[in-house]
Image (cartoon, helix red, strand yellow):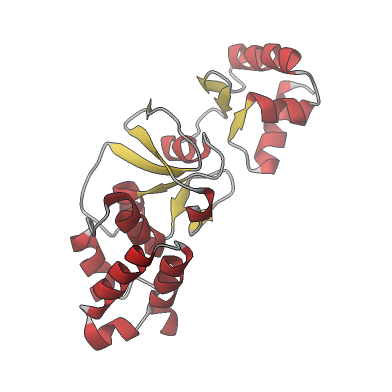
Length: 205
């Protein structure tokens, strides 16, 4: 498979970031041959190496790289809140939820930091073809309580609630899916603070 066909194949598969192992499966070659093959494509500028064994298509943005370098990962925290325009905070750190440990990586303008969680906690995110993967707004606030042990994004939560930016049924469902009684109680308390307003959701509009 020539370089152009390989790049087109990655695009068709929605794989702007690819591992050496996955590349080998695509071209159906041994790890040794695939390593040489990918090295040649890097020299030709057809792909770029992110780190050892991980590559991306030229022009891939740092959010896409950060959320795809570890399979089944997604961006949460301030970067995700910013994506949905739910915060005015500017950060140079991307918080990534991942099923396994990965060292922090420095990208163009951000440092991606990975929080390892149990696989059962990885849900509530949106995948776009060949683009970044962000937590859904509701899951950001679930992640907040899970990672910090308390509500850290209080201003952002208040803003989202006051502007009907959350699907409250989804928020409750995601809390239940965490299988954490403490987290479920904390979400219930957060919603209770809004009284009757907490019975409304954007999905009912």
